[in-house]
Image 1: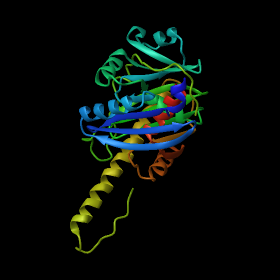
Image 2 (image 1 turned 90 degrees about the vertical axis):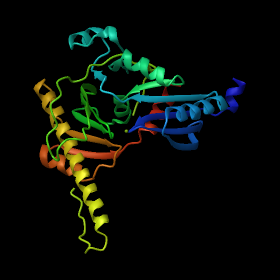
Image 3 (image 1 turned 180 degrees about the vertical axis):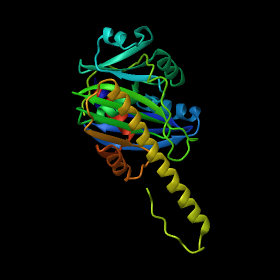
Image 4 (image 1 turned 180 degrees about the horizontal axis):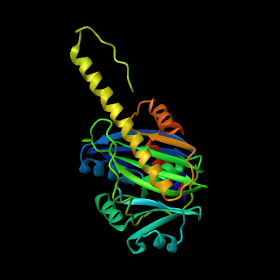
Length: 299
């Protein structure tokens, strides 16, 4: 106890994206951040070296990451019979119950692989926990967390998650082409998470420059097309999720919330409103900061 009074707890969140390991270290004094450091590493060896050095320097270091694959999901209950009723093999999963009301889960394989790759890990969260932690409205609302590799979709009804899906962002899709329907929604399994409650929140106009810098114009045009394509991919993913949700008796969705981590164009909300006649809002979401905030509730 004496030692704890003089050592400030620090939290390190990390995840891999496009072969780059992104990290955020935050040191707290009571409820205030006194130090913050973001770093990126190109190899797992460098990541391990950095985190192990931090742990050696400060034993009150808590390390977290999240499951990035499609092997995860949500259930609107914590009861095993509900899992069985919707076809989830409870022998191959471990779930975390939130507020004694609903749960998230992933496969045991995912947990074991994560622990094997990152032996220093303290907390492993599903991507849906990032959405859930930031969700203020959990009634007839669709949330989508966008990353460079996947979109994570969660639909709430009466404060419970009744639909979840993980959709891959395919780089080889044709511009504005509809997303293919998934044969499987999400086959999920075991999760090593502290069972503690947590609460809580294109068309780009390019000027025609007269042959001054044609290469620059070309780059801008390519970026505009890439963004346009991504926004419509997100729209199609939302359409597919809504169709499946409604086909299974879901209530009408009144709001769509986009948690953006990739820099979507602001017009994506207008596109969604025009196409689906549903109010849509977008906010930038820092995955690393959210992971540290969730970990703080579990320490």
